[in-house]
Structure formats: structure tokens, C-alpha cells
Image 1 (tube, rainbow, N blue to C red):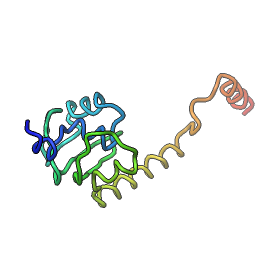
Image 2 (tube, one colour):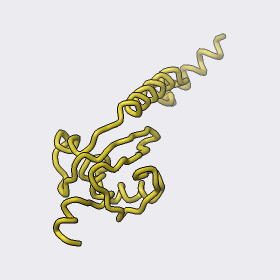
Image 3 (cartoon, rainbow, N blue to C red):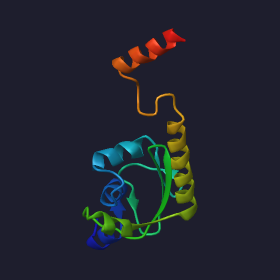
Image 4 (tube, one colour):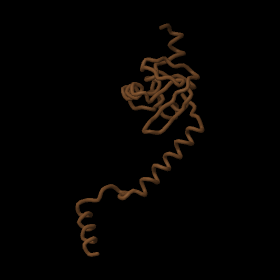
Length: 132
């Protein structure tokens, strides 16, 4: 690969790591292999070279992302700089926010919003049930 090509293209797993979608390249590679990441609507391999203008569909923690590559950076930089590497689709961001709200409200209405009761809590619940 020549130097000029190296400046205009970058491995997908390395870009996802540099853009701070994943903490490690290994995690990025795992998600790519599982098919959770599509480039321009196609399933790809880790070594796929991306360039500016490519659209990347991500599914992270069952939440959708659609980003357009704005720049390439071969080093992992601070988060504010990493956000400049991509532009997010507004409609998908809105869907993700709505889904997050639904997830939060479903957790509040759960039987045990703070988690399972402790052994002491269960004894108190059983004691109250026996009194009725």
C-alpha cells in the first residue's frame, strides 16, 4: 500500500477504535465478525478499508447507530476530537433516544427496581404475607 492510499483509507476496526466506539480493536473485530457492523449496507471483514463518505451501521448494546465517516485518524485521540471523525444521522439518534427512554421506563415498572431483595428483605416480605 502506498503512502497516498494510506492517508485516504483506513481499516474499519482501527477506525471504530479511534472513533471511540470500542475500547479495544479486539472488541471492534468481534462485533464486525458477528455482523453487528455494516459498511454501506454490506457485511464486511475486519480488514475492510473505509474512506471518507462511507456509511457505517452499528448495533451497540442493541441500540442502532448510523454514522457517516467524516475523517480518518490513525491514532486514538480524546473524545471531543473523536466525535469529529463522524457525523451521526439525526433520525437514528432520535430512535435510539426513544428506545433508551422505553428501556428506562420498563426498568422502573419492574417487580424489583433496585434489584433482587436480600435474604433479610425476603424474610420481611414473607412475614408480612403471613400476617394477611
